[in-house]
Image 1 (cartoon, helix red, strand yellow):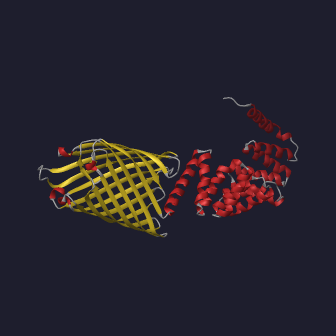
Image 2 (image 1 turned 90 degrees about the vertical axis):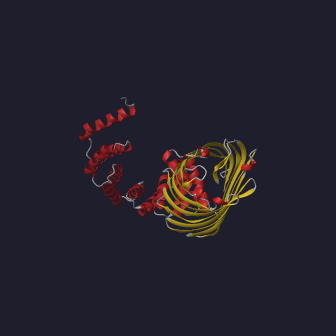
Image 3 (image 1 turned 180 degrees about the horizontal axis):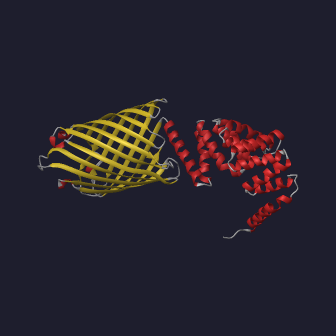
Length: 495
């Protein structure tokens, strides 16, 4: 182990002190000088010993008390520090730095109002003291005096660039607390780009995500759209009918749109309407071209962490330009925001199914689902677990079935502008009656997996997305066995 020259000299110096202290004049001045030197070098225990000797021999000296207070504070003995600083102030209230040390002591003990007063006095005494102004701002922040905190924090950055990232972090939160979301995002964005520590960077990114979410929720509308090309190695009508399989591959143009608008938006009540549209146009297999049109009327009532919603969605599907299925979907939804990281959603949906060309499939579906969302601690993503159970009846007994499914997945921002979404679902579908054609009760297991990566480009609302999906349906009736792979690339817009 090697010691640098400065450390060696300091050790020799302190050692010399211990052997020669008895020879120093009894005025206490030399002990004071040596104590201040030890304090400045960070040797607080030696500094305390020397300063106490100076205090014993020098009588009531304001500066000795002042440095004893500072030393005890650095050693974590705050009550002793308070006593020594009070004695110093009683002897000489004009000691340079005394107000700053008193402010720091009050700050450490949670007395933020008193801390603010001392720091503001220190800043007035020394207008170039950026730290005094910075801590005055933090003290105001802790007292929820956000406007005054902003003034001090921004002022400290003008005096010293070294405090800018930390000051901007708290200034950004002040803007957020004052509902000034744009300047909040601007300052926290600076911190996320320039923070010296990973923890500060992650904290800034967490607040940025919260701000983006609130800005989205504050808008009376949302709009999401994607369009692109998809290659399918086994074309199906999986979105409305997983049994209709072509056993052929094809390329298609595909698009999806979802829009919502709030007619009434109040703190506890939301009423609005929406519209979703899905469409595929195949290059060769036009008989599998699918259009889905889904208008929606919804309402939500919120009370603290609980939200109750009710919606009605008439779904209408066309296949190859002909009417295929009309569904009336309605039901309530219950959401419980457990804390900042966890949410549970419980929903019930009733479907009235009307098939235009297959009347034997007309009937009813009752569905119950439970979703659990867990936001990751760095707020860059979430985990999802979902369980669903549905019971369907129809005009023909062959179409009676129950289906249970389980989904697990996660979404994560792997880079600042890159999101990865991966999830998988297992379906267990069991028919109630013996199939009239195959003379057995049909039992299907379907496995579905999807991976999507989305990259933001040019604008915050614009991106490109690549998606892969895999489906495997395993049935005890071999005619219903199939595998399907799709690869797609989309342009994405999200307002």
